[in-house]
Each structure stands twice: as structure tokens, then as C-alpha cells.
Image (cartoon, rainbow, N blue to C red):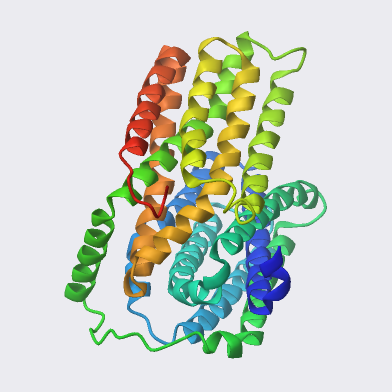
Length: 412
């Protein structure tokens, strides 16, 4: 909170991020809800999912491209304006297309625009990272924790608000609101262009953006990441925790059918679990900077490694209370640890490779848990929760082994 109050530029960048996230969340929910009323709903949802997933899969490429950029602030402003124009076109398309004429072609056009917009977002975000790191250099842990916590709060608010607005606003109006949020982001960055430009400096990168130079840069960046063995170990620990937390909801849904918690219905128990997970992440993120001196990284990492074992134990003995306790502990530790981990990583990697390495870490952090979550849900549905717990338990023990072999004083 301190950095939010004292650093005007950080505050305005954060508010811009809130607007962008709110608009994206509202439009995504509304668009999904809108297409479910048509007979081609399954195909439309597949199109939407693909348009959301491809930018995540290709973020490593956009991160590499971001590392080659100069005049980053000017390009960020241009991209913000382009995204505003793209969603203004989406709004116009939806206003001019009646419900009767709305079809898969319209869905495909909107999905392509969404894919382009999200790809530009990942690219511009990676491109601006070095400037952001210079801005928050003195309060990095607190700033990252505050941004992470408030980002989660905005997404929760967006989901709640989306549930209300879907019933009172047309899909075209919500698309217009999304375009307006991008316009607000553009105006905010135009407002803070001068203080941010003082942070921008010409990169010492005389290489041209060619296929050969891009491939060489990717190879060098990944080699730099590979040499940070402790970073990779901690990334594995974080991924295992994310996998188990991601599986907590679907496994609980399966378990609660035969073993209800107290006198609650399954939906009520799952809602309580969802609230605890969100609250743990938000509270941990807010507390990350304040607890930096009093709570060591080593203690946090042991909590983040051992808490998933409590979750798995709860599933094995059909005790949902243990699942709730373990999930809250794990989410809380993850919320505190993530900003610290990011701070150390950004301090270790050179600015010239920051976009690529950041994107590589994000790719592993997103894709690995997603893929393994789908696999373990399929195993749970086919063979039962016990087999899932055994597999996840092995991953948790592997995390514990990796933690014991982490020797870097930067982390512990």
C-alpha cells in the first residue's frame, strides 16, 4: 500500500491494469454466455478457448520479439490505441448483427480479433517490463505483491459484475465498455509518458530483428535460464503447488458427491473452497512485502511444499476440512512467495533477456499445470481419486527433494 500512495506513476500504471483486466473479464464472460444460446454453442466455445489459449502458447515468441524493441513506450501507446480500435470494431459488428443473423462466422471474426488483441497484450507487457522494473526497483516485493493482490480482486469483481451486467446490458454494449477500458489505458499512459520516458534508455542491441538473430537470442536466453538451477527448482515447486491447487476444485466436486461436508450441499462447499483459495492468494500477496524480514523464504517454501500433502491426505481419508485447511495454507504461502520469487529472478537476469525469460517462466507456469490438471482429472474420473493422490503425492515429494537441494542464499 505504501508504494501505491507515494509513487504516482506506479499508481497510474496499476489503475490502467485494473481497467484492462476488468474489461477483458466482463467481455469474456458475456461472450461465452451469449454464444451458449445458439445451437452451435460447443463449436463457438471451442473457438473462444482457442483464441484465449494460442496467445499463451506463443508468449515465448512475443517475449523474444519484445527484447529486440526500442522506443518501447511509444510502441506501447500505439498498441493500446490499436486494441481500443479493434474492440470498437467488435462492438460495431455486434450492434449491426441481429440475434437471428449471428452465426459462427461472426464468432470466428471476434475470436481472431481477440487472439490478435491478447497477443499484442503479451508482447506489449513483456516490452514494458524493464521500464516497470526500474520504476519499482526500491520496493519490488511490495509493488509486485500489491499488483498481484489487487489484480485478483479486480478479477473477482469482474466476475461478480459480469453476472449482473449480462442480464441488463447487450453484448454490444459490453464490447463497447471493453473498448472504452483500452482507451482509458491509452490515455493513462499518455498522461504518464513523461515520467516513464525518463526510465527508458536505448538498449545496447545493434542486432537487427532477423530470424537468425531471434533464434540466437532465444537460445542464449534459455541457456541463461537453464544455468539458474535454483530458479528451475523453485519453478517446479511452484508448478506442483499450482497443479494441486488447480485440482482441488474438480477433485472436491467428485469427492463431495459421496462424502458431503457437514450438512452443506456440494455447491456450497465448493463455493467456500473457492472463497478460501482467493482469500489466501490475496491476503498473501498483500502481506508479502510486510513479511519480507520476519518470515524467511525457506519457511514459506516448506509451507508451500508440505501444505499440498495435507490436501492430498484430506482426499485420501475423505476429510474435506483437511482439504480446506491445506488449500488455504498453500494459497497463502503462494501469495506471499510469488512476488519474492519474481523479485529474485528479475534481479538475476539481464534486462536484454528479460522479456524472453519472463515469457518462458510464464509459459511453464501456465501450460504445465493446465496440461497435468486435465490429465489428472481424466484419471480421477476413470480410476478414482486414490490414484490421483498417489501421483500428486510423488510430485509433492519431488518438490521437497528439490527444495532440500536448493542452496542459493538469494532464495533461502
